[in-house]
Image (cartoon, rainbow, N blue to C red; front, side, top):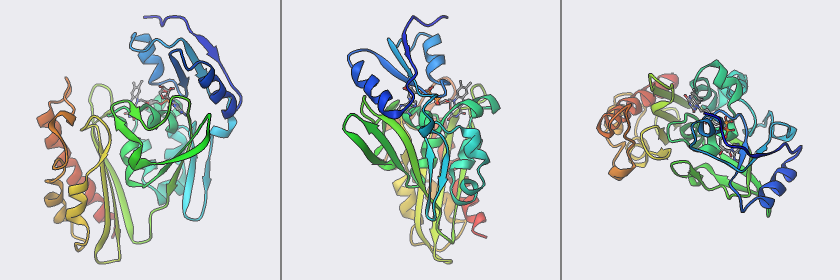
Length: 290
Ligand SMILES: Cc1cc2nc3c(=O)[nH]c(=O)nc-3n(C[C@H](O)[C@H](O)[C@H](O)COP(=O)(O)OP(=O)(O)OC[C@H]3O[C@@H](n4cnc5c(N)ncnc54)[C@H](O)[C@@H]3O)c2cc1C
């Protein structure tokens, strides 16, 4: 199916992109990054924007900067770049999640900012961003602001970004010493998206889990931290045997309407998968603590 016609703009900087968002705020306007969610939605008739603002030529949105305590990833950085980055691979969990996305074509075109801003419940990066305690940077008509990842994902395809805002970069704190992380995914056999994906970060003092951050995508209408599971782990000795006990609480805080249900998997099956993959993510993180 051919998409309906639209106006197309290709701004050269973020300010010009924001000006265009403001100028066309009365119309159905979409930013385009890698285009790998937007274009399929347009071709299938699910999305019919009047205006497309393509940010491909905005150089400031590309690249990765490494600091001593965190790394900052530009919104237009592709999954492949993130998956291949040595520092992100050693010091964060986002590379492992990025490497799990789709196939090579998707990873060479899809962008970190597009993945996060689109907030597809079955996308892989949101859980990794949540357990990383990342900070999302956005620029709109009132200037720049930051949004903690824990406040960013609100509902299916809905985030804390305002309509006139461009997500510019994501700041990802490095893992502490004596901590470990894992991202484990059960992919949909048809699309490769996450039926369930679980990210886990365990911070320790060498003997005890001092902080556990566990989050899931795929299972719910938006990516979420699994608070009750985290509570079971925090303060306990490092022990893989705790994983199943903690994972049994994965849905304790969740209303039943939030569980995803579609032709790939019923809510009941997803709930089961969530427990299994939560336990595996915790066990993998524990094994990486050595
Ligand atoms: C066959 C196939 C398989 C896939 N498998 C997976 C998978 O396994 N895991 C996974 O996570 N994803 C998967 N995807 C989705 C893919 O990762 C998309 O690339 C991603 O969802 C959107 O990123 P994008 O850069 O392509 O954004 P686009 O499609 O260009 O944009 C998506 C939306 O985000 C908004 N947006 C984009 N960038 C910004 C920004 N900087 N600021 C504000 N808003 C912005 C746009 O306005 C648009 O509404 C798959 C896609 C396809 C086609």
